[in-house]
Length: 215
Image (cartoon, rainbow, N blue to C red; front, side):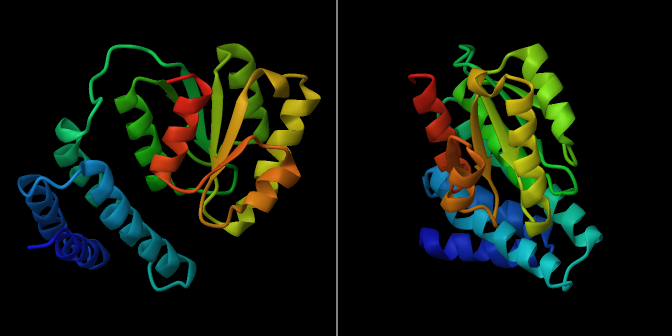
């Protein structure tokens, strides 16, 4: 079975909320020697995009999102031991991560957090629906190297902009690198609000964070 077919099997299972088959596809990917990073990108990330689109179009609702989160959690648990760097003791730096206010999605953020920790970052996860003031308080108190903000719906984009303005007003913007990720986020938007980088996906985001700390 090709890696494309295994990825397709996972996507179909995830979209159909079939956790058993999704886990089976992950195990098959490992057995076939498929790189876990590649499998996450070609299977899990694509499945999440489809599920997110269905939620936006009101084909899926909160129960489906919760089930999708559970599928991702179980799948990542299978893949985790095989990811290079998993369990590293060294600390590459500190990252504060959260989903912007008005956005309750945490699946993509959780995948990024998982990758960051696997690579050796200390991660402070603020969860979802995080207001600008909370981001500012934590950046001021924790002094992270990087602030990662997730925004998976268009409605949240003004809140991301508000967070950047709040960092400026608190005179701490220059103390931290800011990376933004999520389906509606574009390079133009990132530049307009004065953030440092766009995370095209989880792996791209982690690569950029590592580059900033010289890893």
